[in-house]
Image (tube, rainbow, N blue to C red; front, side):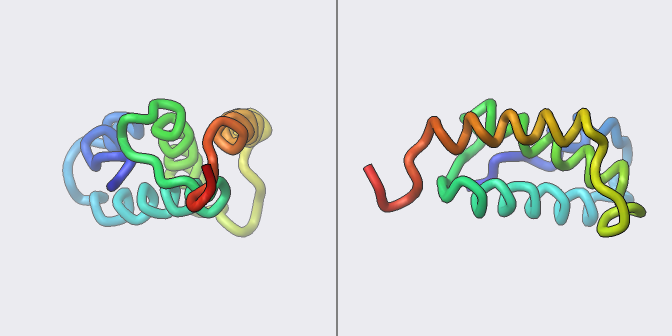
Length: 98
């Protein structure tokens, strides 16, 4: 199950219209996969911390897509993502464990 909907991601990114829906879907899906790979937990849209993490990551990737691979994210975004990731990693058991 997805963490983000297209509409809430577009609202977070402040995007009107549908001309960038394809790229927004790719970014949202990649953010969710990134979170899953890091935490090994399947989250859905009910976990607000997971949702916020994905939205912050989406905003960074969307706003800096020309820089992906050439420059790191801003320190503020990096700190926010690291902080949220630490909580998600330590608050939930990985899949297959109790």
